[in-house]
Image (cartoon, rainbow, N blue to C red):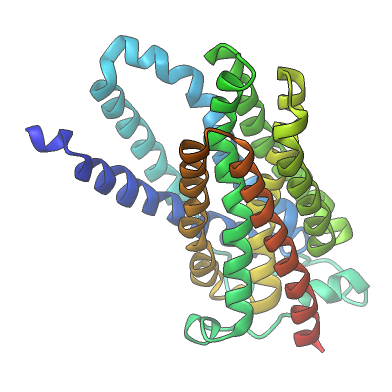
Length: 318
């Protein structure tokens, strides 16, 4: 069956089917966690999606060994069966809480924090949500900040090998650290957001992310400095995936959160365009600097949109 070797099949199978599965995972898991734990929204969402960020840490070192054992096609079969089985088991465990779910059955609701949690916003249906200016601000902000993260994943290994003269295994360390921070950093981000607020934390982190991108081509002159940059960029990626579902829930309620956040998360696809443009800049200029500066620029745009979002959503509440 030679059509399996056609690039169109790869785009369909990996790009469309696997990409859809990734989007469904975030759109189902994060909103469900937010509904069960409204008193700790940041931590609940971040811990639920932590495994997604850590998956590269687990599978990256295993994949070469699997290819040695079963070649590329065999590895795809094994991974598809393994991931498919676990996904079906996990899907059976994901359930929304009952309509009368009360996270504080024995609490006195005179408590200020509890009152804030109990006070529900009006649940905005998707048809209305996509007509609101705030939706487009959320969508564009996610696209901009996620574009920087995808650029980092794509270019950091090549930067280590070409610019720093590292062996492939050494250059891969930076990406492994990035993935590790991206995964393990999510619960920390969630805990901090529950204490100081999602918007203040996002503003701080995105300033750091943009600065790391702008500085990387000039300061990352060896492996330790490259790893430091990878850590800073990984925290930015973790913040994006941990807190955007919280923003959607805080602004538009939880009843339609799965669909509403899914609509916002569709910006992930547009964010990937930054990675393509970054690779094109590398090919055309022979330098990594324009690509990383582009990623820094999109991060700044995302930061500005988050600042506008903060004012917009605060105004809508009053």
